[in-house]
Image (cartoon, rainbow over all chains, first blue to last red; front, side, top):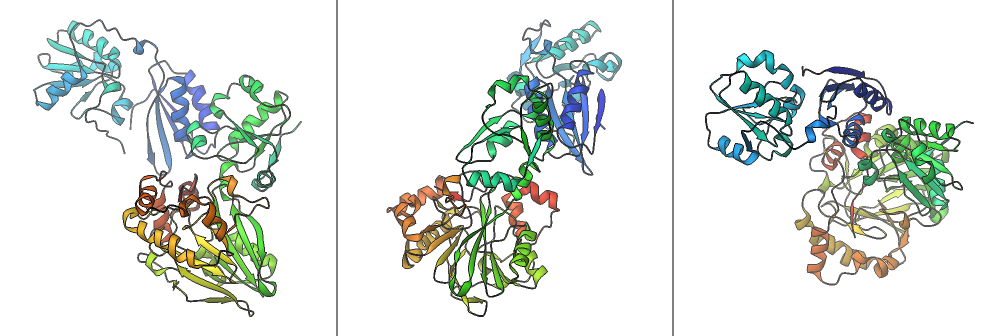
Length: 190
Length: 375
């Protein structure tokens, strides 16, 4: 089960209804939140992907269980596209890759939503979505060398600030992050 | 005002008669670019239905006022949805019944000509996918060549003519569409023939279709003469029927030639392909009318809806038959290949009897153009 903010049941509905309903449901969630769409119309995958692209929404992926497709979509957020970040300590994707290649003793913290992480993440990354960070900070070692990654560097910027405020000693933001990651990734869904 | 429904059969007539038709295709751009309804006088506008959910106002000025507008989608639902909105906006529009799914499955039977002693040759034009299949009729009996999976069309047609299907052939193991041959044979008790060199992995019983092993239809004996013609596949076999027609399978088309790579062996089979096209076919009469298993573009259709041309004309005009240099020929058929057909491996396995996908899955596997040729 991937945690999402809203689940839309479009099972048994034929085209165009899965997309008509998705459009409505997306209007009811906040930017950055994740919608799960359950559908049985096979054509819904390609259409949802194309529709999401146009609206700037992130299509995360689809799983299939017993004939039911589950599509995951993250609502567009305008502020994540801004390039500037304010947390000073940053490295770029290539520098992170070298650290991973060298097997350095680091913690890679992925603060994207669980659904984003599930479909595509760097092997070994720990998943704590930004929204849960406050409550789950205790799972992390305050003295570890922690690299924080998200899609564009924006959520990880906020997470880095928050962690440093709470007394974490060695936090670095990875910029830009997964949107331009070319190294190995894995997923934990079928 | 109500919206009107057009069937695939009605749209086929418009395409064959070269009537003006404006198609508003509301599928996503990827699907539209991959495959669409084509015709001489067919114009398109592609706007995905999901861009029209809030209304059609934005596209009204792009629609012609003097042409029939047909809204098309994958399965019908979205085209009805959009046609209704157009209707509310005061624009007359029809939708395609069953969408591209029914377009892909529609078979249009067209009579190609007469055979001796009252025999007849029919071509079944699968206009949406470019597949061609055949029924040879003589004296109460019929043979079918390269049947599609829409088997009811052939058995129904035979019933209408009052003939019994006695032989069913596949010219080769198809990679672009699912064969209906075996099922028709099972249902009618006809013999099912396949070239043994293509049938090494099949899981069912068949009759070995071999070179020069003639089959007769009807008591006045329309002669079906198999001609081993490898190149598209290793077993590919053509037929000379009644010394009048050459059923060329996927070896020779009207405006192109067969591709040798769909069973994974382009380099190995290119020599066979050349031998068939440049030597074996050369020995045949120029007067034979070539009836291929595919067409690629609407220009290949004759005015009466058939796809047929004299062998002599093809030797004069088909580029693939006029490449003197062997090396150049090799290059063309191994390096110049279009993308392989959607799901072609799964289609081959289905035709071998190795997998048995349900109807919806079969439909999905066959979506898109056939891409069996090189030009």
